[in-house]
Amino acid sequence: MVLYGKRDALEESQPVIRPKGLFNKVKNRLTRRRYVVSTIRKDEDRFETAVFEANFFYFPRSLKNPAIMVETNTRDDAWVIHYKLTGRLTLEYPDRLFREYRLSAAP
Image: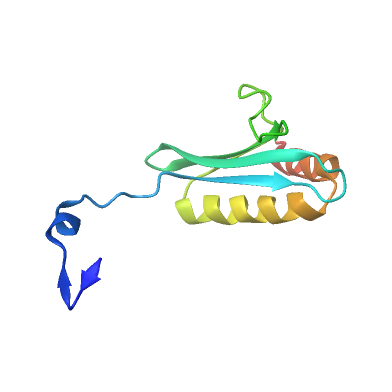
Protein backbone atom coordinates (compact mmCIF):
# COMPACT_ATOMS: atom_id res chain seq x y z
CA MET A 1 0.00 0.00 0.00
CA VAL A 2 1.43 3.36 -0.99
CA LEU A 3 0.82 6.24 1.39
CA TYR A 4 2.03 9.69 0.40
CA GLY A 5 4.75 8.34 -1.88
CA LYS A 6 6.28 5.98 0.70
CA ARG A 7 5.83 2.24 0.95
CA ASP A 8 4.73 0.67 4.18
CA ALA A 9 7.58 -1.16 5.99
CA LEU A 10 5.40 -4.25 6.51
CA GLU A 11 4.63 -4.44 2.80
CA GLU A 12 8.30 -4.40 1.86
CA SER A 13 9.04 -7.35 4.14
CA GLN A 14 6.32 -9.54 2.60
CA PRO A 15 7.64 -12.17 0.15
CA VAL A 16 6.42 -12.13 -3.41
CA ILE A 17 4.02 -15.01 -3.94
CA ARG A 18 4.06 -16.51 -7.41
CA PRO A 19 0.82 -17.87 -8.76
CA LYS A 20 0.91 -21.66 -8.52
CA GLY A 21 -2.35 -22.43 -10.27
CA LEU A 22 -5.73 -21.35 -11.53
CA PHE A 23 -9.17 -22.37 -10.36
CA ASN A 24 -12.55 -21.53 -11.88
CA LYS A 25 -16.10 -22.54 -11.10
CA VAL A 26 -18.22 -22.98 -14.22
CA LYS A 27 -21.94 -23.50 -14.70
CA ASN A 28 -22.92 -24.73 -18.14
CA ARG A 29 -25.76 -22.63 -19.51
CA LEU A 30 -27.25 -25.40 -21.67
CA THR A 31 -27.28 -28.30 -19.22
CA ARG A 32 -26.98 -26.35 -15.94
CA ARG A 33 -24.31 -28.78 -14.76
CA ARG A 34 -21.47 -27.44 -12.64
CA TYR A 35 -17.77 -27.97 -13.25
CA VAL A 36 -14.45 -26.98 -11.71
CA VAL A 37 -11.55 -26.13 -14.02
CA SER A 38 -8.17 -26.37 -12.31
CA THR A 39 -4.64 -25.76 -13.59
CA ILE A 40 -1.70 -26.72 -11.42
CA ARG A 41 2.07 -26.87 -11.78
CA LYS A 42 3.27 -30.47 -11.59
CA ASP A 43 7.00 -29.87 -12.20
CA GLU A 44 9.25 -27.06 -13.40
CA ASP A 45 8.18 -27.54 -17.00
CA ARG A 46 4.92 -29.47 -16.71
CA PHE A 47 1.44 -28.07 -16.09
CA GLU A 48 -1.86 -29.92 -15.86
CA THR A 49 -5.32 -28.57 -16.58
CA ALA A 50 -8.22 -30.74 -15.42
CA VAL A 51 -12.00 -30.39 -15.53
CA PHE A 52 -14.01 -32.03 -12.74
CA GLU A 53 -17.75 -32.50 -12.50
CA ALA A 54 -18.99 -30.72 -9.39
CA ASN A 55 -21.96 -30.75 -7.06
CA PHE A 56 -24.20 -27.81 -6.12
CA PHE A 57 -21.50 -26.29 -3.90
CA TYR A 58 -18.80 -26.67 -6.59
CA PHE A 59 -17.01 -29.47 -4.75
CA PRO A 60 -15.58 -31.95 -7.27
CA ARG A 61 -17.45 -35.25 -7.26
CA SER A 62 -14.30 -37.25 -7.87
CA LEU A 63 -10.76 -35.90 -7.70
CA LYS A 64 -9.34 -39.16 -9.04
CA ASN A 65 -11.46 -39.16 -12.20
CA PRO A 66 -11.48 -35.81 -14.02
CA ALA A 67 -13.73 -35.44 -17.04
CA ILE A 68 -10.68 -34.38 -19.06
CA MET A 69 -7.03 -33.66 -18.34
CA VAL A 70 -4.61 -31.74 -20.58
CA GLU A 71 -0.85 -31.48 -19.95
CA THR A 72 1.32 -28.66 -21.29
CA ASN A 73 4.96 -27.63 -21.04
CA THR A 74 4.69 -23.88 -20.51
CA ARG A 75 2.69 -21.75 -18.11
CA ASP A 76 1.35 -19.55 -20.91
CA ASP A 77 0.00 -22.55 -22.83
CA ALA A 78 -1.59 -23.91 -19.67
CA TRP A 79 -3.32 -20.60 -18.93
CA VAL A 80 -4.58 -20.28 -22.51
CA ILE A 81 -6.04 -23.79 -22.40
CA HIS A 82 -7.54 -23.09 -18.96
CA TYR A 83 -9.36 -19.96 -20.13
CA LYS A 84 -10.47 -21.53 -23.42
CA LEU A 85 -11.92 -24.51 -21.56
CA THR A 86 -13.64 -22.25 -19.05
CA GLY A 87 -15.23 -20.12 -21.79
CA ARG A 88 -16.26 -23.01 -24.00
CA LEU A 89 -17.58 -25.07 -21.09
CA THR A 90 -19.94 -22.24 -20.20
CA LEU A 91 -21.51 -22.09 -23.67
CA GLU A 92 -21.15 -25.52 -25.34
CA TYR A 93 -22.41 -29.01 -24.58
CA PRO A 94 -19.89 -30.55 -22.16
CA ASP A 95 -19.91 -34.06 -23.64
CA ARG A 96 -19.13 -32.75 -27.10
CA LEU A 97 -16.29 -30.60 -25.75
CA PHE A 98 -14.83 -33.49 -23.73
CA ARG A 99 -15.00 -35.80 -26.76
CA GLU A 100 -13.18 -33.20 -28.87
CA TYR A 101 -10.34 -32.91 -26.33
CA ARG A 102 -10.07 -36.69 -25.93
CA LEU A 103 -9.83 -37.19 -29.70
CA SER A 104 -7.20 -34.46 -30.08
CA ALA A 105 -5.11 -36.00 -27.27
CA ALA A 106 -5.31 -39.54 -28.68
CA PRO A 107 -2.05 -40.74 -30.29
